[in-house]
Amino acid sequence: MLNKEYPLHDMNRVFDMIEETIGQGGVDDKCTDEMNLLMHLYAGLPAEAVECGMMYIHGKGAEVPDSDITALHIRLLNLLEYCEKVESLRVIPSELTTEEITRRSGILESLADHEKVFGTQLLGYQYNGKPVESKEDPESTESGRLLLMNSQAAVFACEDIYKTSLFYEDKLGFMAVHLDDEAMPHIKLTRDNIAVVLVKGEGAILKNARDFGIKYDMYIYCSEPFLLHNELKGQGVKIIEDLPEANKARQQSVNRQFVIEDIDGRHICVSQFIENYS
Image 1 (cartoon, rainbow, N blue to C red):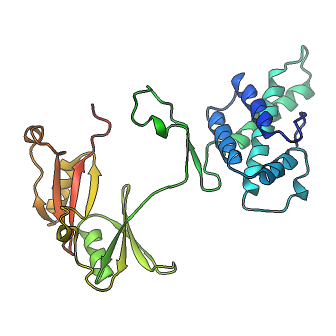
Image 2 (image 1 turned 30 degrees about the vertical axis):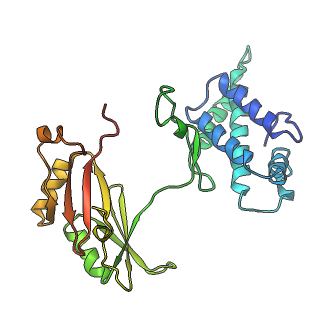
Image 3 (image 1 turned 45 degrees about the horizontal axis):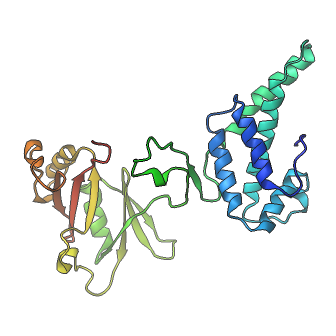
């Protein structure tokens, strides 16, 4: 239940009030990310949906029909209640009675319940609040964005998805999940941050990228290619292009890499991950 007086139809002012509270300190580190996530989501809504959020703020949530964005309104109430509690704790009476001490202790303990959702995914979105270190940072456009796309997977068409799956499991160390209940029955292979989807194909499905003048069917970026090269070689995986020595690789125009061939003849390049290197 909210106790402060909020504007009737001005969501921007509501977020100004939240920002004022956060600016005074004493809040959780992720509180700003939570505010930015909610603010960005409300900014993309039609006026009618924003007005529904204002009705929640003014205790009229029961009059709002349930919808896909109800969770957004609830998260906003959670943040507002949190801010009000933080503000109330800043006011310290000159004399603290036992009853007052107990009340303040209860408020303090309840803050954790509000904080546990801060910065977590909402309506499929997550807020990227990474600070930009410099204006020359090539990734500066990524800062402060709402992230909706969570991951991606390569799709490989196969004559026998079970045979291909066994190769990736036994030789390349992937884990397989069979997903026959989806619109496109397939096997999903995962290892570390890599995902591959195997589907049953028709026609000339074994045509690979080399038939179109492209050297590789898939890239895998790897922080330590030497370790992965040794692992796969030990498993008997066919190595099409060996990993060069570190000194020799410095003279090359491409990243340090090696190339393997899977059971269906696809060429997969494993390339040194150098994004964080100078």
